Length: 84
Image 1: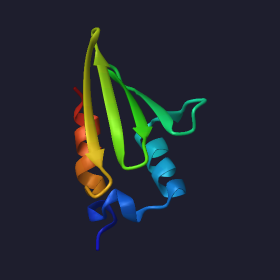
Image 2 (image 1 turned 90 degrees about the horizontal axis):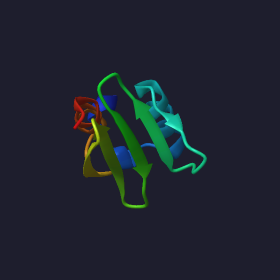
Image 3 (image 1 turned 30 degrees about the horizontal axis):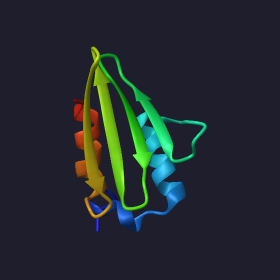
Image 4 (image 1 turned 90 degrees about the vertical axis):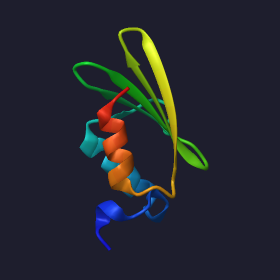
C-alpha cells in the first residue's frame, strides 16, 4: 500500500508530527496544536483523540473542518493545503 493512501490512524504520533513538519507546520506550546502559515491564509491543526481539526483563517474569515483519522493521508493533506 502506498504511504500516501494509508489512513492517518495507521501512523504513529511521531510519524504524524513529522508529516506536519514536512507540510511546514510548527508545534504550539500545547503539543496537540500545530500552526501552518502560508501566504494567503493560516491554519491551526489540532490532533484530537478521534479526529484532526483544522481551522483556517484568511482575511478575518474562519472555516473549520474535521477529518477522521480513517481518511488517507493524501486526501487530508490535499484538503489542508487547499485552504479555506
